[in-house]
Image 1: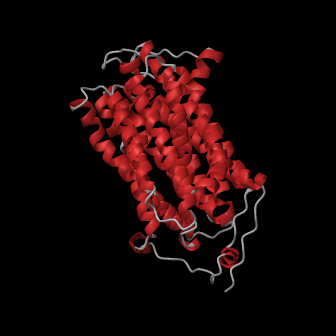
Image 2: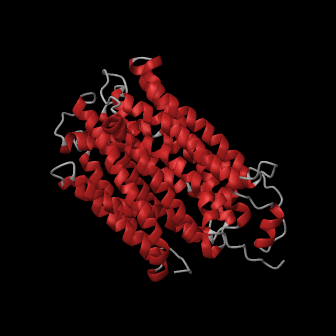
Image 3: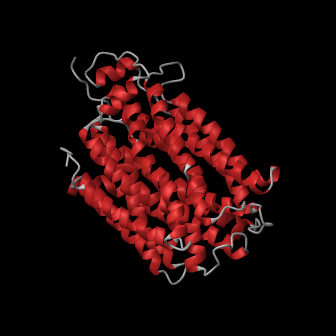
Length: 442
């Protein structure tokens, strides 16, 4: 059967298709910037944080391949990917509403456990929505537009993440919502930010679901020069895993280094800033100074996401000039230097400059591995392979989640800044390993 080129989409169509990512990242940014602080507000110690965050990659590793498989094989009046995107959205919005309110219904350790449970539900829901979204972008774009598509997607992710990260700070400084709270409670500026996050998440997803067309099985078969695929059995996931493309395996090592580093940054930045920059004691997790450190984490996370949004628009041009692998390597080097430089910060404002390099890395991590990989995957297996590829994101986070806390406690004497330095070293290792990935398009 002769392969027919997919029609090129307009910038508006690509924008609408990717708009939901802005909502997903809005919620994700609120989680990344505030979850550790919230759990510490509920009584978690610094060495326990990585264990609580462990539920996130564990649920992602289980959920994404399953959702990918079933979205590959779902063809109904509501579409192929859209039903799963909506299910994940609704569940995540519920978790956003409940996470900062756990202490209102429970006390002490019960509140901590419920908060950790809400973190698990939130991340599982984001995974349910995210995986079909990435497959949707790959489904709808031709090979020549995929780098552009993933870059626009990363740009919108950056916009959502900037606002989501900064919202608690904005709530306090511009809307005068209190950032103080009794011990064991979450401040109002954080709580209300989560409420806004739930609304933004839902609205952005609805824009994509309403205005984006999904290709039918017969259309996809035409565009890929194949007969219309029959539905595959669930057990084929294991065969697909065994038969993954060579480049996918090689990218797995790159992803391992990158996501081990990111996990450390998300988990330990708040305690690292509080102890290393603000000079607070290890056990201080409820003072106004600690809450200021928590808010500043949101600010600097917003900076790296803002940088990533701008840098993402440059990625297609840079990749065209030097190739996808070298583009990704350069970006990871910038991220590694940025993370290591946090150790040398004399003031909290110095951390803003560190986040520039992290922004380069984050933009590239969200775009370049998928741009390298998408053209090497069979269209009928796009969803399940995107889900399997998520293993290389979740496994390093699981390993970090198990060993990260004990390492900080036993080797670093609870000084979390050293976990950030190690993250920078891992980011540099990812830059080296990407150069050995097989990619004919470079």
